Length: 137
Image 1 (cartoon, rainbow, N blue to C red):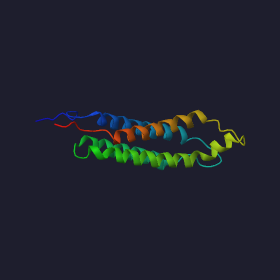
Image 2: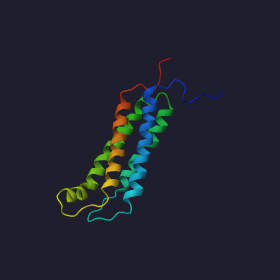
Image 3: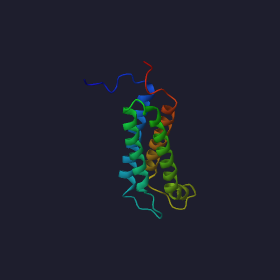
Image 4: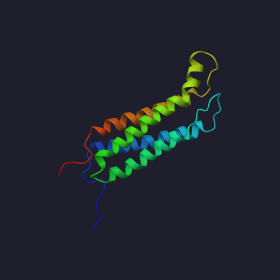
C-alpha cells in the first residue's frame, strides 16, 4: 500500500521545504559566484556551501518522517545561522574596504544577493520552527 508523503502536512512543513530550497539556492549561488573571485583576503569558504547543503539534505529527510519533522527546522536554523556568520566573516574585508573607500569591491551585487539568500533561508527556517509540521489527526 503506497502512502502519500504530503498527506496530513501543515503549513510548517511547506515553510520548512521553502527553507530547504533557499538553503540549496544559497549554497549554489555562493559556490558558483564566489569560488572564482580573487581579492586581497580569501572570500570563498567551501564550508559555507557544505554546511548549507548538509543542513538542507538532513532537514528534507527529517521533514518526510512525521516523528522527526518538528526537529527539521532546528537543523535548518543552525546550519543557515552558522553559515551566515561564516559568510560575514569571509566578506568583512571587501565590505569594509568598499565602505571606507580603500579599494572598491566590484562584486557587491553578487555579495548582496548571496547575503539576502542566506538571511532568507535563516528567517524562513526560524518561522518554520514555530509552526506545526503535521496536522493533528
